[in-house]
Amino acid sequence: MLKGKIAVITGGSRGIGAAIAVKFASLGADIALIYSGNSKAAEEVCQAALGYGVRAEAFQCDVADFEASKAAVAEIKNRFGKIDVLVNNAGITRDGLIAMMKEADFDEVISVNLKGAFNMIKHCTPLFIKAKYGRIINISSVSGLMGNAGQANYSASKAGLIGLTKAVAKELAARNVTCNAIAPGFIQTDMTKSFGEDNPLVAAIPLKRMGRPEEVAEAAAFLAMSDYITGEVIRVDGGLAM
Ligand code: NDP
Image: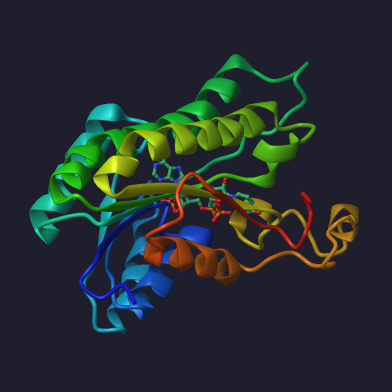
């Protein structure tokens, strides 16, 4: 159970982040979700979470912005009193082959997916250290484990997240702060909406189907409640990257 815990979920307005927010709420956690621009979707997720009798509030913030993410963490701490769990889920794609990839597309993906996680961890760490408690969960990807053609920027950001996860896990373990990653495969969300079940890549998944956001949320809940797992990467990919 996560009763009494305050969970911050970036990119909580849609897809995997929304499923994590609702799952955590169902386990009793109060929810602070961060979104980029879609306030209507964020409000809907808050409403779903409120249905479990917990607190749920949405905060607009570009996680790639160091000062804005600092202000968001301070505001959440102010409103909720503490932060126990941080899920770095906000992510974007700007796909293209390396020969055509624009510098801006590389920079933007690294800024949101990798620097965004750094920003949030950096600003939450003083709270975790003071509380002698923290659970950090970074949403990576099988693209970060295997590399994916057409996603040099995204694969680099997701591989970077795994290095970040392990370094932070080692640094903060003595403070009872764990840091783990989840590497989803192909999950049905807006990010993959151009990607039907008939896509030939689905045939390469041993379990022969795309995953559901709720299936990633199960792994996130497991890690949020675990006290003795740190520096781990859990694949939720139907066997794709084994
Ligand atoms: P979606 O595109 O469905 O949702 C993305 C979420 O991130 C939205 O809530 C969006 O907010 C938020 N977001 C985007 N940019 C920012 C930003 N700069 N600051 C704050 N929030 C931001 O993505 P998914 O649910 O599919 O993916 C979630 C995570 O899982 C990502 O990190 C993705 O890389 C990873 N992943 C997804 C896979 C998949 O198959 N779907 C596979 C492997 C990993 P808003 O609604 O306001 O736009």
